[in-house]
Amino acid sequence: MGIKSGLPRYELYLYTAVLSGALVWAASWIFQASSENVSRKAFRESVKPGWYYFGRKMDVADFEWVMWFSTFRNHILFAFAGHVIFAKIFTLLAPKHRSLIFCVYGGLAVLITMGWTFMALILSHCIILYSVALMKMKWMCFAAGLANLASIKLEPYNSWQEKMVTGSFDLQDILFYGGCGFTIMRCMSFALENCEKKDGNYTFCDLMKYNFYLPFFFFGPIMTFDKYHAQVNNANLTRKEREMWNITTKAILHLSIILSVDAFFHYLYILTIPSDMKLVTKLSDWCLAGLAYFNLVYDWLKAAVMFGVINTVATLDHLDPPQPPKCITMLYVFAETHFDRGINDWLCKYVYDYIGGNHDQIFKELLATISTFAITTLWLGPCELVYIWSFFNCFGLNFELWVEKLFSIPPFSTMEGFMGDAMSRRIRGLFNAANFWAIVLYNILSLNSLEFAKMVGRRLIFKGFPLSTISVLLVTYCGVQLIKEYERQQAILEDEQRIKPIDDGKEKEE
Image (tube, rainbow, N blue to C red; front, side, top):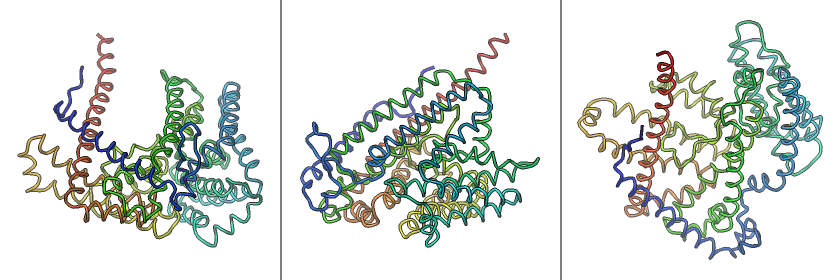
């Protein structure tokens, strides 16, 4: 059955043309600013010689991207290649004991990379939280876990622990905080799942197998213990239809994205320009809007590539890991805004959904969001910028519920009932467009700086009113309508796929 569009065809074409033209227009302004200001003093630290045949310098302001594809590239390829080979051999020889093999390989890799003092520190966190888990009291598990997390996020405790790790190399700081932070979150998941276990307790060996799975150890994502334990102990290791083809396709896609982003950085210096506030004040409103949008798209791409590569390895190990984050372009509600789906799943399972229930009561939702963002603030490392980011995102999440509740009661619900579907869709699209830019402005706080976020907001909302404000909202409205149409078609496809097996079953019975 063909899929009929909810939008008239002429609207689809119009929205696509407007959105494409606006993106090209904004990119042209950024390209011009990048080309004309490459010799500025503020650019010398972060704009370096790039690929020779491009004949242009490259934006290298993001140390994470540079680290992943220069310093860390050889290390990660060697470690992951060893893991895949090791895992494949022992999965064939002893599929029932593959979780132990993963643990042994991961533990040895961590020990060789970081040294015995780091390993002792990791084990101390595991022992403390395992001991608390045996009491089967959730509040104690949370208290102990958050105290351990605070010990690596707050001074002077984090510096004291970091000094315990001997040796020095380029990646030590990143691996130290990544390994410790994700270990504590995994241990908390183990402890909370142990509280739910009715007969006896999980063993310390189960915790070690869970924690020292190398692909997830330093950078995540986090699979909650219940999911990992069930999947890794499944001896029926069969591949889904076309699974290896999908893995290969994703690997090629990730490589293509990496090459595209590297080429992109030779022409648009989206990371360096926001750091030069003197230059930013001279840019057009469209250039600033493009910079804010492209920064968020890039951050999503970075997360998608990092977690995509890790998830590919996990899928080869017959696991079903958390998926990469949803593209920022498709986010127009705060409820779906997250860049690490593993952390998001952890928070939803143990905090947000646990407290908020079905998320339709204002007080419970407020308590759930405050608790969730309090833990997120601790996870990110408390500081002024994180406080501001947490407050505004928490407010945005609750404001959506308040507006939804308001428009579900008369006379607003009655008015919408009299409207046609097209008019209702357009009015909601306008609200969603404004919401999209609230998400952009709140999140560039953590990506760039408070000054840049304030500058973008001031120019688009106040100084640019009404021309820039209305034109940017109009373009965003077009994008939201296209996204909603895409989501509608995906929902129809999913319904058809669910109905088809039932129909096939009835035909076989007949």
